[in-house]
Amino acid sequence: MKILVATEKPFAPIAVTQIRELVEGSGNVLALLENYKSAPELLEAVADADALIVRSDLITPEVLDAAKKLKIVVRAGAGYDNIDISSCTDHKVVVMNTPGQNSNGVAELVFEMMLYQARSGFSGKSGTELRGKTIGLHAFGNVSKYVAEIARGFGMDVYSFDPFIGADVMRTAGVKVCTSKEELYSKCKYISLHLPLNDKTKKSIGYDLLKLLPHDGVLVNAARKEVIDEDGLLKIFAERNDIKYLSDGEPDSKAVFEAKYKERYIFTTKKMGAQTEEANINSGVAAAKQIVDYFATGNEKFRVNR
Ligand code: 3PG
Image (tube, rainbow, N blue to C red; front, top):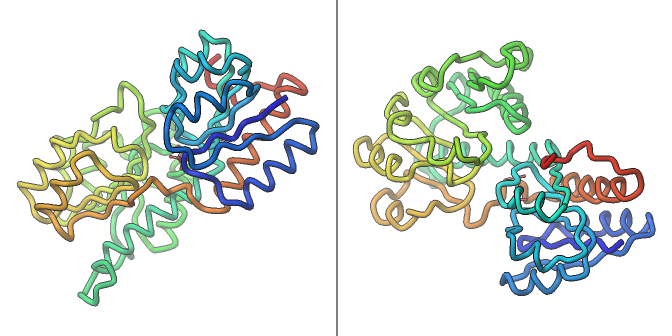
């Protein structure tokens, strides 16, 4: 079977080497389309692929139409909002993700952004410390578990709100349970977002929640830019000059932040939470294993479009 790794944002070379060893070692063929710049390149490359490994690459109905032999696509990562799930189902293509495999990289980036901001961008100006501060984890999935562990190491007071996760799971991780979003946003200086992007969460973080943040509140977004209602975010920025926004990836209204709110934001130029050798190896190799196993035994454990 031909397994295509199609990554607009490439994996670290060491991860590709390990994916190759696994794919070729199991008698399959590996093809690479890394760093591609346009959709037509992807359409051409998928034509004879039996399986696809992608990251945030857009898998649209057009891609699926072009991929006549495709049987399975694995998102090497957690969020599969980049994949048109119902179109995959219509095309009889199995979709899987690799939950948890890149979570530590994302959690560390949360702290890298928080520390950089707390120390005034390493400018020499006096900053603040994390010890004793409150952090609220909005949703308690795999990334949140790592964030909680690191936060506790820094001596932070950790809270979370997640209606889908049992309170005992949070308490076992040393996390205090909030029973509403409003309680979380009112209590915590730092809010770290860990929601998946879907129809319910899109633009769900806006003015009404952000206005509850305590003085000097910091919103940290290593999830998806689309969960933010940017009009609401800009409204609270205009009203309160103590609020900060740290985001993995640039918001649509980046130009407004640059023009009006210098020193109150950090935006990575490209989404890079999972852009570490470790995360690339873990998620890339897991994706390859899941494909090889699916072809060998039909294992659908990580299937998301049942
Ligand atoms: C994920 O959903 O796994 C992360 O956002 C990582 O995305 P990436 O593979 O595009 O870096």
